[in-house]
Length: 412
Ligand SMILES: Cc1ncc(COP(=O)(O)O)c(C=O)c1O
Image (cartoon, rainbow, N blue to C red; front, side):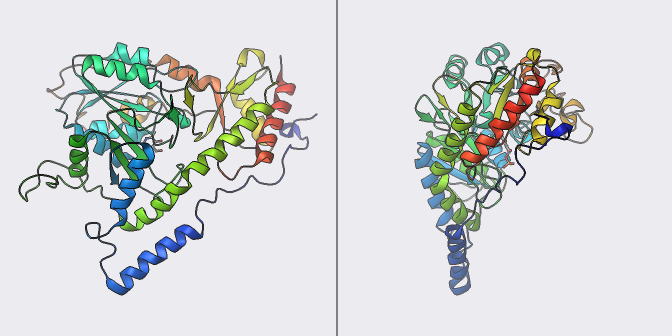
């Protein structure tokens, strides 16, 4: 069969379904809030309103933690979780190597130094063995990003933290409702951050974030940090410490509350589509689904596909282009090693100061280049396809058919 990239008929000609996140339930919830504002005023008020508080309670219960603090973005949530720890300047925070810059920028805003643990080459997530190696006398925290929807191997990470008295922040931005050994991600670390922007499994109306924890002291600190240091649960009326205004609005929270109710179904549908895809590519020789670690259930933010490049006649980019030409979603790489980005490479933080890396409170030199070879290997051996809750069996079958067709053409 001639590949579509060579002029043949593609596997799929009609477009893949759009992701329809919003239905009448969100519209009604928003309209009701606006109606309240119109009639009585005040309903937008974060302090007088009820929706942000309710969303926090519902979110915490959903994840399985005692407390939650709603924020304006996932980046704000990571910053708030770090802010709650009240770290000294010049501490090291161990980060996932492959993640969003929004998970790393807050470390630098806190005047701490990100240290990147290497990745598991089969999953892209931080490798606990590398985390252990990178702990120093300056390390105070670990931010474990559950990338692509798949949980990090949390048990060994928590053991390392316990041994060295470190705090662990799970970054669940890409992994709402993913599970690790029967627990939802976000309930395992000392704190967890979620992004609720529109591309994520559930959204608080386009942007938003949430910090969850079981630790009451960390909860109050998170709440204070996200609201300019306000003295919540404290004596006196004066603000307590440096914070930001990262508050969520009532308008965002009404949408988020409806979305949270939909989350189990969203994740179940993604899992069903990926299971079907896995079945459809079972007999392929050079392509398989990215590994999901023992005891974990991915929430599939996107789908990693591992290629055995030695057995293929073409490089990964060409393989991915050929799959995409068949009319199904396929991208060559999730190429997001944060320290390779210009802003970190060129130390573009506070003007030209190169702070906090050159901060006298830190007093060490860091060289990130080449420090995570397995992260690079993971990127170079995986390509991606997409999945969302509007995919049906047909989408899964078409992706499988396209992968099979392209593999057959390029097998060595
Ligand atoms: C792992 C991870 N952390 C943090 C963020 C930042 O979230 P936001 O875009 O809501 O600020 C993202 C965004 O994609 C992310 O994927």
